[in-house]
Length: 626
Image 1 (spheres, rainbow, N blue to C red):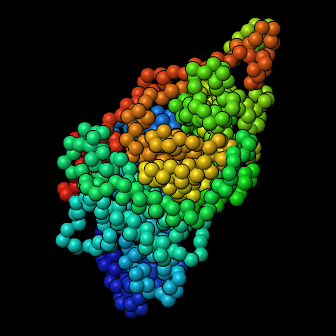
Image 2: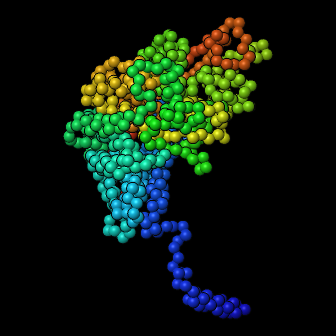
Image 3: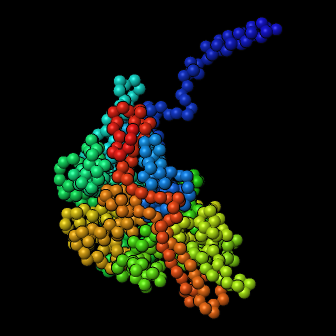
C-alpha cells in the first residue's frame, strides 16, 4: 500500500512539472506581492513620495511619548517605575544598560533611517521620472531628514560615523570609525543648505520639511556646536572626565575660535528670525496676565484645539501631527499626564524645582523666604505657569460622573484638607493625590500635574479620549531664543534683549534690563520656562555644563494642608482661602523613589555594547567601561 502511495505521488509531481512547462514562463517569474522593485519605486513619483514619507516615521511620537524626555531633567518626575528613567537620572547608564533610550535617538533606528535617506538621494539625484519640481522636493526632504537624524545622534552621543552613500551587498568592508565632531557638524550643515535650496518655493504640506525647517535645523546645530560643552578647552576645564578623554575630537572642537562659532550660530538663527513667522511677537509692552496665559496656551495647543487660537499654528516650523485612525501614542498625552482624579495617569509630573523658577508677574524671582510668596505660592505668577502646570486649587475640566459629587467645583485637589463629617473634623485626601479614592496608584508624587499640551476642551476628559495637539519639532520662538543666546555670547546685549522682551511681552511679563552674566542667567531661565516640556532642557543643561546643579539635583516636591478656620463647617471640599489656612511644605522626594545624581559621563550617552561589538573601529564615550 505504501508503494502505491509513493508511485501515485511521483505521477502527480511529474504531471505538475509537465503542466508548468506548458504554461506561460511568466508563471515562475512573478514579482513579490509584498515588495516594490527599485525600478518601479523610483520611476513613479507617487511611489517615490511614499518611500520618503516612510522615512518620517523616525520622528516617533515627536516628544509626546508616555515617558517624556522632561523626566530626565529637573522639569519633571516620571510617576511610574521600571521604565529605565532612573537609570539615566541616577547616572547608572552604561553600554549594557543605557536606561531610557527613546526610539527617535536610538543608534540603530537612526542609522536605519539614514540608510533610507541615502537610498532616496542616490536614486533621486538622477530621477527616473520627468517632474523636476517633485524630484527636487523629495530629494530636498531626504537631505533634511538625513541631517535631522544625524543631528539626533550628534546631540546625544557626540560624533558618529558619517555614512553618506548606499551600501551594497558583497562590499569588502562595512566598518567605519567615528568622524570628528567638527566633521559631523559640517556634514549636517551642508545637508541643511542643500535642503534649503531644493525646498525653497516648493508647495508645503503639514508635517513635511520645508526650507524654513531646514534653516531652523541648521541654526540649532550651530548653536549646540558653539556651546561650552563642545569647546574642548572650556569643557576640559569644567570636567575632568572630558579633560582626560583620549579622543576629544569626538566630543567637540579641539581648536579654532568659539566666538567665530557663535557668529555662525547667530547668522543661522537670524535667517530664521527674518522670516517673521512668530505669533504675537510684535509687541512693545506686556499684555495683561489673562492675555499672556491665553497666548501661551494657544502656543502649546499649536492650533490643534478648537478652544485655542488656531493662528498660533504659524509658530510651528515643523510639527509631528497625529492621525486618529492610526491610534497614535502622541494623541494620548492627556491620558498619560492628566490628574488621576480624572482617571488619567499623572505620568510626567512637574517638579517643585521647575515651579520655583517661574517668576512673579512683576518679573521678580519667586522666593519661599518671602512671607507673602510662601503664604500664597500660586498667586501672581508668570502667566505661563498657569498654562503649563496644574497646581492645587487650579480650575480645570468638569469631573467625570463618578467624581462629580466629590468635586463639584472642578478644581485640582493635590493636598489634604480638613472637613466636617458627622459633626467631627476629619482629614479629606484630595482626589488628585496618591491617597485619593480615585486610582491612587496614578497620583503625582510632586503635588503637580502637567497642563501643557493637554487640550482644555471639556469634552476630552478621561482615559478613553484622544486629542490632536501637534508636537513642535521646530518652532519660531526656539529660533528667536537661539538668536538671542548667540547675541549675548557675543556681547550684543541690546539686540538680545529686544527679542527676549518680545517673548516676555507676549506672556505678560516686564522687560529684562540686565547685561553680561546677569542677562545670561535671566535668558537661561526664560528659555527654561518658554520651552518647558519641549525636549530642550536635557540638551541645554548639558551644553551649558550646568547639569551637576540642575539635572543632578534631588527632585523637590510639595505637601499641602488645608486647616479649617475657626467656626467653618465645610462638608464638601473646594479651594477657599476664606474657609482655610493653607500650609505648603517643600522637601526632597522620599528616598528610594528616585535618587538623582550627576556624573560627568552623562554629558554623552554611551554607545551600546552591541554596536561596539559590531564595529571594532568605534571608540566609546568618556566615563564608560567597555
